[in-house]
Amino acid sequence: MDQNAYRNLVAGTDISCGKKTLRLALKAVSCVYSAAVRSRNWMYDRHLLKSHRCESTVISIGNITTGGTGKTPLVIWLCNYLSEKEQNLAVLTRGYKSEHGKLSDEPAILAKSCGAARVIVDSDRVRGAQKAITQSSAKVLVLDDGFQHRRLRRDLDIIAIDATCAFGYDKILPAGFLREPLKGLKRAGAVVITRYEQAQPEAADGIVERIKKLNPDVLIAKAVHEHPFAVMIKGQKLTIEQLREKKIYAFCGIGNPDAFMNNLKNLELNIVGHKIYNDHHNYSENDISDIYEESRYMGADIVLSTEKDWVKTALLVKPQSDIIFAYLALKLRFVEGGDELKQLVDRTVNSDTEGISDA
Image (cartoon, rainbow, N blue to C red):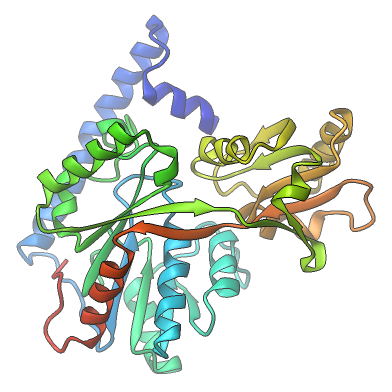
């Protein structure tokens, strides 16, 4: 099913008889999946399933819902902060849809943006941790998308919660976007509410209140997504002011396409057309040809995507084309709780104890 159609389905905006029936079917599957997840967590909580501790500090960045929570910018922020502290670190990622010998979108961005951190792509996080320690002598391991991967014990769990869809419509997959019951947030040491700028004040306060009810002791930080410029081929940059003078055709294949489109609107850009693909879409030459054709038809001067899409399409783009291809740069900025989060990370890295979380 098309990703946008699925999102609209689980959001419940269509109350037709057919969609109601389909949602009931998804709810039935969700009950089975929820039972399996609850059982697995119960066994880990009671040490019936073994979690492996490694000799390095492990900090996990994860989420409670699927898709597009701003997790990757948070991983980059953490790695850059640890690099400033001259920590020898590595990033462990499963590399979703990675081809053998190649980096997929997210690992490629991490390798480019995380400074001195080595990126280890391995679906087996325990094996990846051992590689990082033996091959790179890493003292700190940043576990990308690690909240539900409990085989590798971590010292701190940091959760990214997207302010635009914080709790996944309060339903477990596939009836909603929750990857596990919300009570799983009790395992978190910190929560970062991302895209805070896109939430109405009352809604944002409600998110904080609900998190605190689930985990009164958790540290809550708030971050916004900023877009300082766009980047073209060979690293040339366009300021936001320069972008506003262009007619833009936008495309993306990410977990939360609405957030990207809302960012473009908030930046007051002139969007003449757009195309949405499914998350982690593997672009082909035909896709790029379609984008060229549609953008020309719309009279666009520039085709704009996310960096995640850019790393998968740049080699397919025609360098001498009359239409410019670029991606919108993204920077995470904390508006509240950033210093407290840094202190928590410092305590975790410097601690000689068992760690903050036994998850």
